[in-house]
Image 1 (spheres, rainbow, N blue to C red):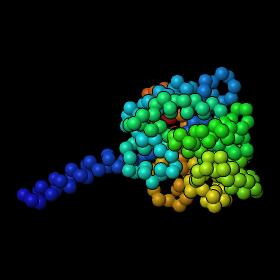
Image 2 (tube, rainbow, N blue to C red):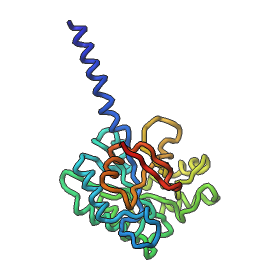
Image 3 (cartoon, one colour):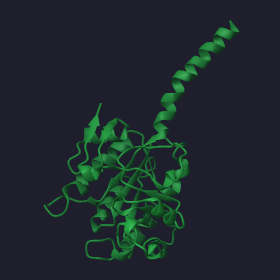
Image 4 (cartoon, helix red, strand yellow):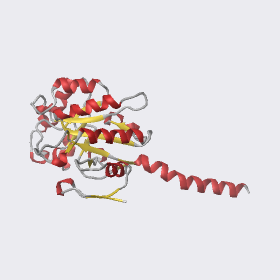
Length: 261
């Protein structure tokens, strides 16, 4: 009888454990750019309206997600439904995210996002200023990280110090906080780029449109994939993406297509 009881206990655990660990292992890292209405200027798919962005954040809040930044990477397997919100280029309209986060923040929900700023563009008319970045960083809801100094194709440059180290140093001087993550411009990288990046950063994100699954492979944290959230994504599509139900994702630069169950 004792052997039978142990058998059924082990069987129960074997059935239950994959479901519990799967959600923690398959992590969506989402990528945004402009949080604003699309008015015909720029690339439509790089916009998400403030209204839709707010609805998406409410979905995450109401469905038990934990929003993390790369400073909290070590917490990813210790929290319920981890998700990373990343926003590239540091556009001025990202102040809409600050307004939305302040609106949604509560004792039970802390919204968080990573802004990848292009350091030489800080203060341009359409970009966040040093004051903006400092203000966002000081809320504790934003991690300000590097998207290089001038947004080049890193595979084709020689001056890695300016693009990687100088951009890191400038952003750190603004926020007073460590810069530990890089977003590769256009998602482009090769072995040389990764080795140069490792000199200054602990993490790097690309644009390979899939979920992060920890495999322990070489340079894994310098090849972090991200999934684009686009202007026309419905809430049903967004929900399926963050819940891990996107089945096939074609590279964004080749006109991203997502299929769902």
